[in-house]
Image (cartoon, rainbow, N blue to C red; front, side):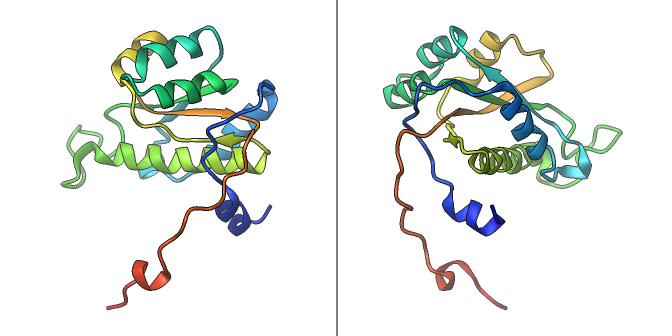
Length: 179
């Protein structure tokens, strides 16, 4: 699949078939996503593949009452917790910030890695949706993450059981300015 075709064809999938995600396919997706750029090549993004019963527990205990997100997670055969190694991205070796943006670069890198993951999954025939409304501290606790890690997003993944249309996009004229 060409990059343009992959980018324009990927949709947020919220309904999944019950078919399990093959672990070898997932490993291939993560290997592809590992090529996403990162601050000074720090490569801080890590993925945790979550299956049942822990997946449903995260859905029930971490979605902050957003029943739609809880149902999406429960419906997916697998959940990916995208995590980062804290205090590495945006820093110099002495611990100082490189720019005034401080440690916000870690979220930028996690976003790039998350989209690379979703595009690689789409290329492999799998659907994904990036969820941002959840209790990250409770999720980290349930995942038993070490203290130097943080959960930044949850990505339900599986074979799509829907084919949503592309939402309306802004025009190039709305998006691009020349000076």
